[in-house]
Amino acid sequence: MSGVLRTPLHAIHKRLGARMVEFAGFDMPVQYHSILEEHAAVRERAGLFDVSHMGQIHLRGPAALATADRLLTRPMASLRVGRVRYALLCNEEGGVVDDVTVYRLADDHLFLCVNAANIEKDYRWIVRNSPDDAGVRNASDETGLLALQGPASPAVLERISSGSPGTLERYGFAEFAVADRDALVSRTGYTGSDGFEIYVAAGDLAAVFDALLSEGAADGLVPVGLGARDTLRLEAAMPLYGHELDDTTSPLEAGLGKFVKLEGRDFIGAEAIARRAAEPQTRVLVGFELDAKGIARADYPIARNGQDVGVVTSGAPSPTLGKSIGLGYVAPELAAPNTTFDIRVRGRAIPAHVVETPFVGAGGQ
Amino acid sequence: MSSTQIPKELLYSREDEWARVEDHRVVVGITDYAQDQLGDIVFVELPEIGKPLEIRDVFGAIESVKAVSDLYAPVAGTIVEVNRQLEDKPEIVNEDCYGDGWMCVIEIAGDDALADLIDAAAYAQYCADRAD
Image 1: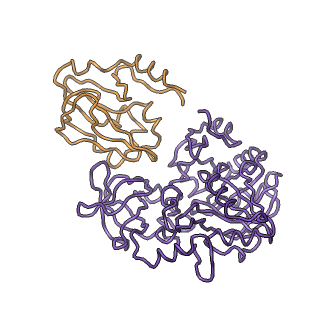
Image 2: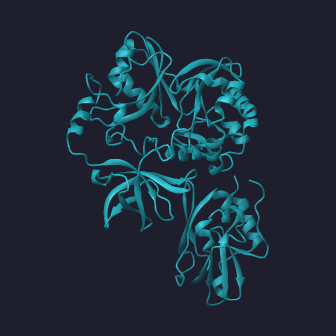
Image 3: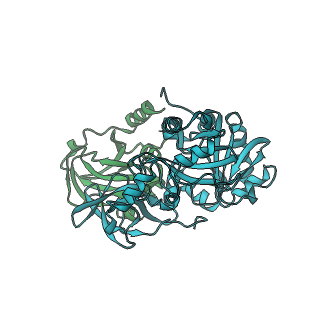
């Protein structure tokens, strides 16, 4: 498989018996043993993910803050040092370039954690729209990232960290020594359960991953692959770029209005978002549950009275709920909870209904 | 992957199905190699009773968390029975693919319907040839 990238943990994944799959140009573990078991481990105990394929783009210098404010849908000047904020990078047409988390490291220094599939695209976009003194730097290759998620995460992490990462607030971050390696730890994640994202130098990844696994064994910590990462984020109704979001999607139709602040601000795409918001919406993202046996998957049509009325963007069995769930775009008239429609699965119509999201609440219940 | 189970008394197809011949009734399921490759099975779509099949016709689907795989008729004939247990407990296929995880019974016209099936030794070689 030439041309496919590897994270520094590739050999460890193989040693642990992971089944590998190509994702965003990287050879990544999709499961180590069982997607359903790994999913349950995160909800009930703890799971450890290698997410080093994701990217980190820094802005540092006199123009860093103003540039971030101009590129992102939420104000960054008001983001305090030690805090993280989820926001969107938009293009001039108000479509989503990427969804990112932004970390304020210092008055004139912040970094964006970006999706693996978008690293080059985001970097070029940011450089093209930044003055020189915004100090844009792509640090993805030298930065490793692990996610430790689940109710036992604080206990596991505290045992091998200096200081007390368990006292971090949600969306807060600080520096700690984890397994004696310098780390930036944030109380963030992509699962809907409590947990942490742990940034270390790429060269320190293996030591920290191994230390967490062996220290966490007592709490039932297991390594978790991308298969369960997807079922977990779907239960939390968190969007996945390339499915719920792409460069034609307006943040408002994706239900991300609370991550867009238009009043008193001028960022790339603001005018287009405001204009599109004033026009009748053509589609809206909803969550749904299937009412008969079957599984909805991306690109399956959504139908009503024999007519196509939308499309599924993501779908899977929900291990926590024991039913099939999904996200999809439908006409706005069909977005109210309990609205019924069919999902077309291999030519058959499976009944479904709209539900409020997230499917599984905060804390993973 | 630890050694795959390939019972000697069964016949096999290159689509990773097994066949147990009982006179003119052929019981069909997927092999241990197949269930291991699929991972957790979360849904099995089975055919209607009475459905006529040519060899290698798609007669249903088996879904893992991440993917859908078609099921191909290893013999030509007519569906006369399906395992309804799999509707509520698809995981039985992972747990006992040669026993309680059977999928359907196909009634065949004559023994020449079995001509494309291979024996356990040939199937074992086929699995070995595909191993990483």
